[in-house]
Image 1 (spheres, protein in one colour):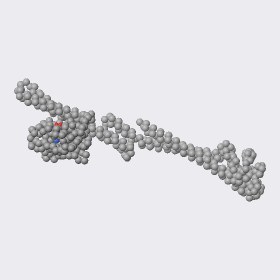
Image 2 (cartoon, rainbow, N blue to C red):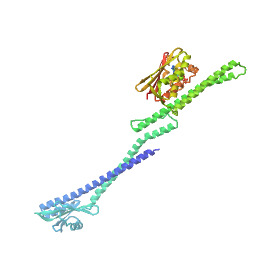
Image 3 (spheres, protein in one colour):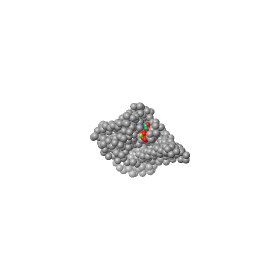
Image 4 (cartoon, protein in one colour):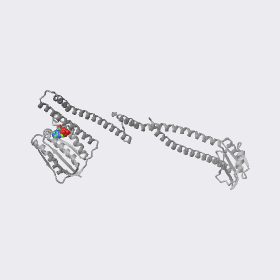
Length: 456
Ligand SMILES: Nc1ncnc2c1ncn2[C@@H]1O[C@H](COP(=O)(O)OP(=O)(O)OP(=O)(O)O)[C@@H](O)[C@H]1O
Ligand SMILES: [Mg+2]
């Protein structure tokens, strides 16, 4: 389950290990180099200082004193005359000294020089300093140092480096393990959360801290979970209300059909029951038609075919269609618009919108009242207002009227054939046009439906 943290950790480790190796190696080689250079410098300085003493007092006792000093120290000395014959030497250096002296036939500078520098292979390193009295070479001081001590020092250094190296690898591994876990834990949690989501468990809650990309992702998953949970709840409620909506007319149909099929019932009564059954069947038919229409609108599978439309002539058509219905209820319908307003709308769909709104206004108004349609164009927008002087909508219902199957007065609008889907369809269509709709209403005074469209 920790695959990603392992991969990430391994990647980090390879890179950091590479960097550490390069750094350690370069540190090691510079350190070794500078320590060796130091050893040579010290040896040469020691030889030079013996030479200085001898230049001041070149006599037997000083010579013996120098040799004696060196037999006490870790270094050795050999002093030759100007021809290279060994005069004095300390300890058992003679065979090696002879070999070196024989090889040294170059001109030796005043500050001396290194004559044997291979500390890795040879038993000693060596320097030489010339003794010069009154401008004439009197002899040479050869200094020797056992390379074992240098090897020892290098070995110790190596040992330290190995210890520190292992320690730092160990610390690197711990740090990387910790870090990669810290980075991947939120990812793993999110993965588990999405797995739960896909199984239909929307109760997942992620703890997200910070503002980085991971936190953003966490928040998105959280929002997704909440949205899905909401959708699930809404769907459940919607199905519950549909079955409720269907149950009532079906109960009527079943009940009246049962009575109507009884044998000893007079014709007139039977006809009454049959017409009730017919009305209820019509209601179910409208409900199913509206639901189907909404489902289509929802899936965005419907296409709106916008065309440039003169709003005024469009309203005239709607007016002509609706006028008889208003007249039969002794109501007046008026519209007021500017000839120049052109909107891009799907005429068939938009006619549906207007008829729905006018039908609502008609249903909820008293005889003799007026319903008016006003159109205004203001900064690239067209605002259409359908207002009535009817019953109005109570304040607490106003936010819900665009919801599916929502009706303020269930029994009354049922009697008038309402399904509560009209405004939901209206809203979907207007939003598909890129517009918006909202309602303003004063209970007892009247209602205004306000549509805003882009003028283009
Ligand atoms: N102009 C209005 N005046 C008063 N109430 C209204 C008005 N328009 C809508 N309503 C209220 O909003 C509810 C929802 O309206 P909607 O058009 O969605 O459903 P409906 O008219 O009941 O059914 P349908 O339109 O499907 O026949 C209505 O039941 C009604 O209570
Ligand atoms: Mg309606």
